[in-house]
Length: 70
Image 1 (cartoon, rainbow, N blue to C red):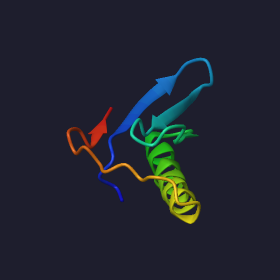
Image 2: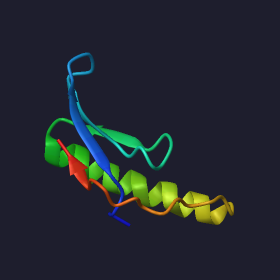
Image 3: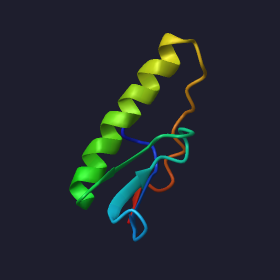
């Protein structure tokens, strides 16, 4: 599950770290620290995948190019 690319960055506007998963449309989370943002996005990824499977939506295969970009 964790083979999806995660992009982690600081949002000055929101004053939090943001973690996005480009391969899972709309899947993102934030946190006060990098570690919190990553933990939150891992939970969001699992929920995204569970929901897609529940409704029979396609689940993209991880591309595996970059795993974490910070």
